Length: 442
Ligand code: HAX
Image 1: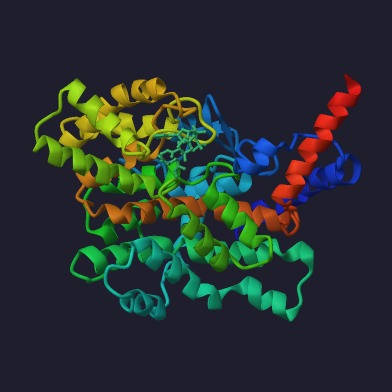
Image 2: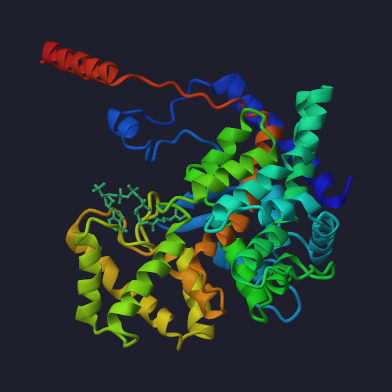
């Protein structure tokens, strides 16, 4: 076993008794209440999932294995001369719970490096897509195509002890993650550049290699690392993470599960919001004819969007009740590297104007910006101006956290997910029963 896998195995052995003890002795301890509002309201806030990889506090934002993102950006090893840590180090942390040493990161880089070569048929599948296909559809299919490589599926078919499920899942996860920069950058080359692939360099880390294959110079390697790290995980209830977990719970392999989660991420209320932000900013830019809007013009533009029955992309969140720290990290980077970019200036003004407008409208529970309000503008600044592509970048990052989650799902033997549904008539009956109980009591 390699260092990372050996360490993971130790952690799994230590963790299993904790889960087993809860199951054996405390299965009937109540942790939440299921109301009609929750059932009809998309289960918003219902505490019904478990993950130890990350936790999202409504006021504070995300913590990966107990660390806030600003802490991680200080604590994790980074490449020489870079502002942003290694992506591989974040994967190590998510998987093991420990901040890796330089040597442990080097070992993890090696794990990724040796698995990065993409089978030829994946390029052919990407090449075969009809024109005008959305890059997320191509990305999801490219991943799905590799299902035939799954060790897990092969081992399962040969007969495998449940306790060993995590092992081939780990192998599948690393094999897939190491190839994602190549898949993403090839989709970009095919759709938006000259169609020619730039070879990866085995001496580079995940972020630098991605920048190289995109054909973009420094500091785009740092931009890529930052983007992949801040998008890696957001606990288990969001659409992409939940989809990945749900699909994998039927013992579908990593390729099937990650392809499915990518499809969930491709919705405009979730990951696609980053492309929507840029589309919206382009509309603003066209209206202003390139001039900077005055505050009242910008406020009017926001109101026009709301009055047209549309959401303000990049604002609001199902869990967060404060400005997303992922937004703030990118804002800090932008203030340092692209303060004069005119699209960033729009974003900066919107940061000051939109929350008040949303508060005045009085619908959104969280009027503050989320991660997507800022990410596209940075990409645009460094030349990635085909905004349809932005959710692929999100998908590469998010795969890291979801793969870590699925490996642990298998290690802790989490079962097939299968909640129970009711009919509307049954809900109405519950209401009647409750009302007659209250009448009798009064
Ligand atoms: N603009 C306008 N209206 C908004 C809004 C926004 N940014 N955010 C919320 N609202 C509205 C909702 O549409 C809802 O209206 P109705 O009662 O008419 O249905 C009302 O406010 C209450 O919604 P909420 O409880 O505050 O928010 P939800 O948990 O239902 O939804 C969303 C959370 C993120 C989907 C929502 O805030 C939204 O649509 N935001 C814009 C899209 C976006 O930025 N999505 C990315 C979120 C981050 C993410 O997952 N990235 O991947």
